[in-house]
Amino acid sequence: MSDNGRRVTLHPASRLVIGLESNPTTGYTWEVMQLDPALLVMQGPAQFKAGSTGLVGAPGSQTLTFQALKTGTTSLTLLYHRPWETGVEPIHTFQIPITIQ
Image (cartoon, rainbow, N blue to C red; front, side, top):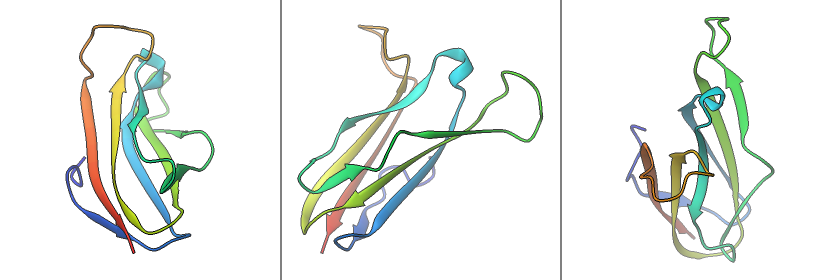
């Protein structure tokens, strides 16, 4: 979350890996809400890694990987929410402006 709002510069064909704290056992997950699919594409589903506590239901981290396709500018917005809940504000929003050059 410390990189929230920080501008990122990529080159075509390079990857952007984002790791954020997550606890899917509560139903909350990070979901892509905004990106330009002509410039940036998600590489497979998000991956979850459990924390080191060994406790069931403990938080861990969710990793999302994106690949830059061609030059341009876009914004990537991720929401931490329960995807099935409507009309409920997300707990967190992660947004970064991206330049691909």
